[in-house]
Length: 536
Image (tube, rainbow, N blue to C red; front, side, top):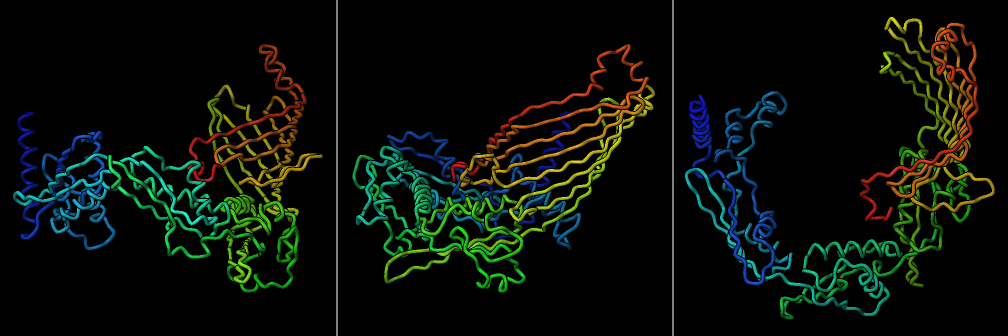
């Protein structure tokens, strides 16, 4: 039986091979991949497998999938044929089972060899040589590469070609602090590229709004001997003047009722007021004090991308604005050589009030099933300072079809009122808020009526005063210094007391009690892609 299965399998493979061959154009071959031979010179410490893996990335094109030397997906591609429609079962089947053939017209071994050689040089293997060729057999063609790898070069010295201008002095100082480039480290072009981006981010926090990492130039001198490289860093000559100077903030303008459909009307500069150095278009929806807390910089301060991102993030996290856009306009006075920026924020409010209904169904391990209807109303700008007022009312029931639990259903009705302020409210204490995330203070009042059929009724009163804030994008704190609950039982039936005679522990369900407490919670999210960029 096994022997017959093997024969059948190889027969199918042979059929596929013959089938694919007849579909390939006469002047073309099917690409079957590449072989890469590595020849290491004396002194090369990197293993052959790592070198092969490194340069294989530059090999083009990517071959089709093969099993036992047969391009099975290409066979399906041809057998299913060209669909008449872009969408449909045949198109789906062809995309899932097959793949288009990679033909020899896409193969260029010499170009791939040059790319492989560039990869080696970018990683410090200077003067290495890669040669490429191809060979065909039947309807298949393969690429063959031979890489002669010379020892990797190390960075021996780093020099800034400086004209002692403030910008170059600052660049040199920042590069020496925590650079990705260091003496003794292997030369790597990716390190240079990453260092340029890092320096650009540093400059963006110190006023250089128009700077770009492409303005930085690195020149590597590999002729100093002993497989060493001398790196020379400098600014390109074509760097524009505006990129060489730090900018200060001249003015900050806010349009808090901006509408894309009537933007010309919304940005007219009439009816502007000044509050805490901020120019704000007069409106009836928002109190100017709100913008005083949200905007973390003021006219006269040095431009900083961190402060810019803080302010944007704080506006977005308010939950009051649907769209937030800022614009920086250079206001340079060429006579005084003072470089300034005008900042404008276009803020589109979200719908102030909303209403939502929600129906839930559930089952419990104690053989109860139930449902609950919730009605939620919210006001996102209650007192014109982005306060969030929410009111929730709900009703639900839990029933069981188990004989032992019949006539023991549960009913509940409740309401909850919460008011959230986008700031810390602490008696006798004032905080200067300038972090990435707006803190919140929340006041909560709640009541629930709960009836356990034929047994008792519970009235639960609850109040809570809590603070919520984010330390960073992945660290969140919640502190409730005051949390009070009062539970009062009533309408206790004789049937319940009869049950309690056999099980006294259930009497705890009908005790009236007041609970005064506090709690603190800390949430850590280990996935934090922004930490390395912004330190948040």
